[in-house]
Amino acid sequence: MNPKTGSLILVATPIGNLADISLRAIETLRQADYIAAEDTRHSGKLLKTYEISTKMISLHKFNETEKRAQLLHLMQNGSTIALISDAGTPGICDPGEDLVRACIEQNIAVRSVPGANAALTALVVSGFATSPFSFYGFLPKKRAERLTLLKTIADISHTTLFYESPHRLLDTLSMIEETMPRRRICLCRELTKLHEEITRDTAANILASYENKPVKGEIVLVIEGACLVEQTLTLSEAKALVEEYIQTGMTKNEAIKEVCRRYQIHRQSLYRTLTSN
Image (cartoon, rainbow, N blue to C red; front, side, top):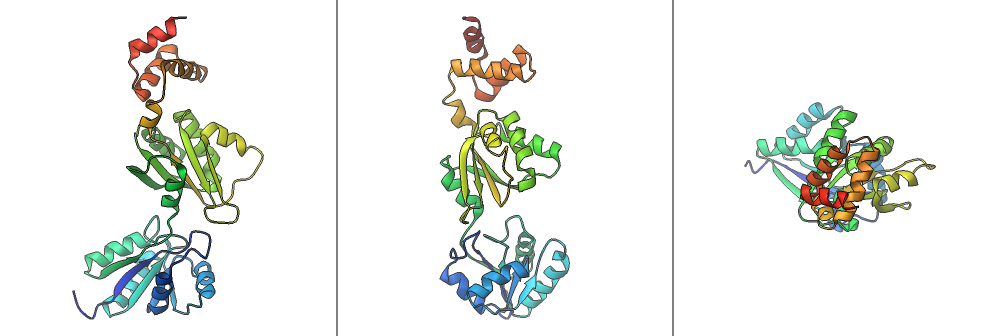
């Protein structure tokens, strides 16, 4: 590595409450030669709050190719770049990911100042198993692709989580109700902000709660793993679930097959339960 080469420092910033920033993060932002930010106007509020005057360079999805080249050139000539996102840890679902990869390819040092992250915050408050877990970022915008992914998630035995936008939330919840009708989910909205909301329930019940109110803010959805449901599903509960599936249009055999597949119940045992009365 060239001793004159600069470095990239990933600096986590608050996800809502401006007080959730570390002393080290503030000092790093002050000492950097430049700050690369998704939205300079948005990040300017944070910098003003902590009296940070470092020059900002915008880096977002519409200019990332051009700006990435500029930032790499600056670092190759000795500059230290502090990278921040609009909220939370940079490099997750933002252009920072590609900049990190480019720095590594060009042998530029990459360091991190850890801090807030919406996904991990939602995971630990959900009450679901935290190890292992899968994070999917934002779900696909296309409905068919989203539904296909949710069907895959329905069979995953560990906790999964993802970000979702307010205008797609209700549609996504309806898909979860369709693919995982009895699964517990945790909806985290506006984490660390004044109107923070954390709801743990089924998708159907959460949908009902939004019937007469608009959906606003940043959202993280956490879905309990399938195995946790399987361990508590009795044959009588399976029988009730078969009836629910039949009401959605499935034949009796299709409903039995689906329940047995999803909850790992022996098919003959369920048949005996259904024909015992």
